[in-house]
Length: 240
View 1 (cartoon, rainbow, N blue to C red):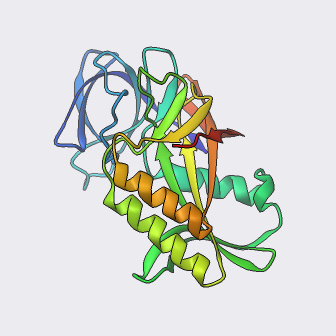
View 2 (view 1 turned 30 degrees about the vertical axis):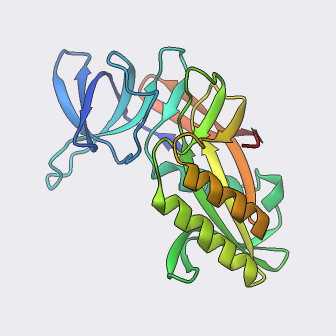
């Protein structure tokens, strides 16, 4: 994924969940939209460099969208939760993920499960219908440096997705939960059981039901007003 015409600034504060104030290089303070509904714990430190995308649509109240930031360690993080689906979709389409090299019927946003939800990616792998749910992972806590964690807040929606994937397994299909670690300073991944023990329990039940768990980390490169985000490597998932 490539991003163009980015504007760099300094993070000041977040409020009402979807708003962040940013000071641009010329000293102007602007309010940008953030679509990330999580806590963004470990990320929102005043003074962190951020990268915004300007928008000229007259119908939009906010003229900037927050995409990327840099934490004090120097690691770069993608906080736009719309991007992971496209990043994974592009990697599968380009046959960059070995476990999906021979897939067919690649689609996004396909209805599935008992509640007629929408799965992030659908494909057929060796003739087996495969449903892939994707989660954006950005949390690293001081007591576990280098370990990405999910979730960063309690998530009923996340538990529902695991239940829907488990249902597909019962139908003879393949269900995959893919965690995309969208920051550059991680060596492994674990479920944040201390933040949402119910989600951790749902993960154990889903694994027992046959749901597969994959973890990939992205590489985020920024040069002037452009950025590239792509999958770099797989990470190990620690047991709870």
